[in-house]
Length: 448
Image (tube, rainbow, N blue to C red):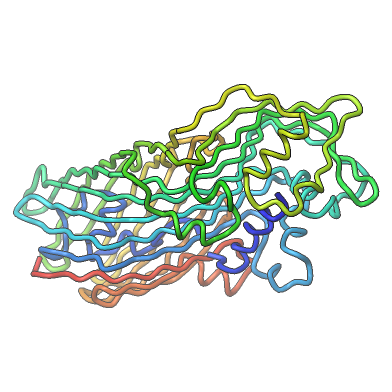
């Protein structure tokens, strides 16, 4: 278990990237497949008659404990992240948009797209239990720590792929106004999944002779795994090798847009609202397992937490706990269903003067990250001023994220190529707890 924690923090320190994918470029005036990922209704506003997405990659990490200055300190990452009593939250997310094609015909817009996802998350992990496992209680000022977590603590990893089939139509249009509706139907290909959840975790950690022992403890525990992540949670290659599984899930996005036109510059105002990722997928594999347990350690009994020091898989964690005799199985199944992170997106892009635009973007999650069968999301609010010409844009997203707080970045677009970061400025000038990087290229064919 210690290696699981350290691996998560190692990914943070090496990749150090933010939470909203494609921050700033997602509301670009050059409307294409990337915009349609946020709202499928934008396909009826395609800037070119046809578009080919060659690639687009976004790597994001955010946390609520470690800033950039901490990475250069003499203290270990695992020491820093478990300081204090605030629960630890960390999100490491990779999104890769593969080949895609879109075209517009009269009032219609259509697209086919492909994506792959990888996630490693810590959700509300008690800093005291993390300190006991990773550091043998080095951050504790006394020889015992009381645990009283009235929430579900999760360690979650997953990979999956999707193929999207999208359609949009102009529902109402005049010389000045345009109203669109659209939807994307997603075919889901679950790859790997691993989840360790400890709900209502109460107990006492005693530090004796340099070791940590858990006593008087109760919790509802969920252990679930499928594919490579069950046997090697901390090996990053396990994520890369198991992105696309077999077709075993479906989801849908739907949305609408409202536009005030401008003959010269495309539009004076463009806005939209959408609901994304309504659906789920079923994981099936030879080593599939999901089991709910009751954890109970009473009286003079204790669990030596040093047993988890060299553990790097949930199967090993589960076996140690089962062998200890402190777990009682309450339910178990082989195949299991996992819900996608359903979110509400809303945005508006206003032309202040020709070539200068300001957009605001909101992402509000509609699901509960505490649920063991739930892939996580974050709430995000982004304000983006943008200098925009037909073939060139420069933009500076200013974001407030649920976990890492405020961040400022910069991005550029030249024709179909784009590159940017939602937190480059704050990473350089202050103690930011997130950073991100994205890059991509798409080819537009035919005049609008």
